[in-house]
Image (cartoon, rainbow, N blue to C red; front, side, top):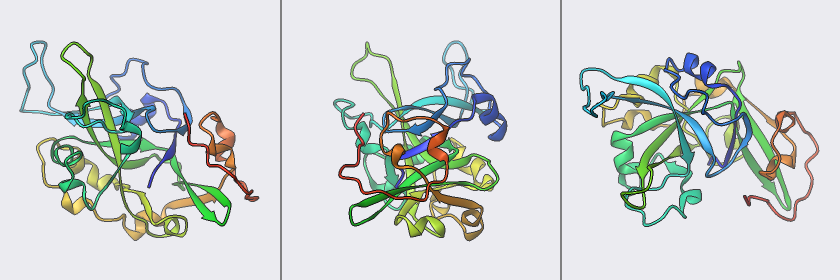
Length: 249
């Protein structure tokens, strides 16, 4: 699964990494070492542009950065209260789930992350681990997105989910699930709005891709969403007992 992650790169850096246009105009989220459900996050999307009249140009596409809220709210939802429970979508079943199948076919995105947190429980001990790319490049987490509004007079809410898959390699030592990380060679197909069939990209990451990851234990300070700073990424080798896992916002 993926319940927290770090996103500290500025939009200009992300635009360069993902060959995208930075159209955020400085309105992106702040540096965040502890991204939590329902937070605003930067994503990468590729769409057919529209002119000033709203007419779609089907002859070309543009890859841009877009801010979304983490926790998908399906278009048919009566309200947005369930968003925190929709931060992840299982890659094995997304194509058949009403909440995700349309987005998988038509609205896919990449959610850049410095790395993600996962917890391993042993008795009463719940130790967080941080997994990131060994070379410092952003991880391209496969994502789905959609739009929702409660009524015609309300602004659109754009939300997203991270696709997860069976954990392999080092991450499997901590949890049986992990984010679906896309290699650069898959970005074009994944983001192409004219491609509906992407089942070949939903398999767990390759051994080579996972071998390029590094994982380390970090402080249990990350357990609280109130903590947010670079110290959360520092190696920490002394697990402590926790009575509660603070996931409240």
